[in-house]
Image (cartoon, rainbow, N blue to C red; front, side):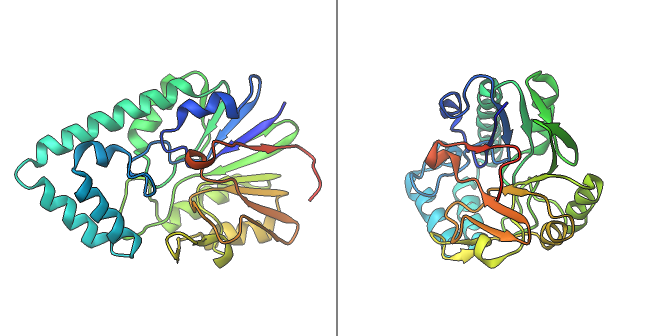
Amino acid sequence: MTVYIVSDLHGASDKLKKAVPEGGVLILLGDLINFLDYQSLSGILSEVFSPESVAEVVRLRTQGHPLAARKVMRARSAGREEEVSTEIGRRVGAQYEEVFAALPDPTYLILGNVDSPELAHELARVTPAVTDADSRTFVLDGERFGFAGGALPSPLNVPGEITVAEMRSKLERLGQVDVLCSHIPPALPELCFDTRAGRGERGSKDLLEYIRDVQPRRAYFGHVHQPLVSSLSVGRTLCVNVGHFRSTGRAWPHRSGEAG
């Protein structure tokens, strides 16, 4: 059995079949849909709003002004709020259905910051290939994997964010694991800094504390699309950003018992 780790799918479900060979186990670390790709300006927002509006949102968010970006979207929706909300909801639902239909059997899933938890959890319940792994442990190929999904609060205030207390509670339920899987990184500047955005994303101090205390062999995560450092060791634990799958199309192969 080979376990493949993917994060930040962002709608690129067509690439999964090539990235995860038949018979492989997929661990999916969140951000399933493509709400807005900052590089190509594609995504659900681009299908609903004008290219000029989306470019302005990307510019503002990249410069660290998420509230101003939100005001732009509100202004472009003025007078047709219900229509815009319905259309976005329809496209979000359609994209989730497309993603879940493409997930291999078996898939172990947690969610990221841009995910819609209620919809994703419902689809996971009715998709036999998918296991909702959040806050749970599973033995895969002889190693115990623990899962802690979600992202911590940010100015974006998106649906997949959870509180610090909720993240801590998830980790407390895991106990001892060989492999830790999360959407966000532990709170280390090198792992949290996004070189394209030119700023640090929010990592978790509780994830870092868990890693230092438990010392799993591996800690896998995503969230930071262009990290300053893709991997580093914290004691005996190798912390690995498995990459922005929408851009790379590559899954990270985990090999049980591999040294280092």
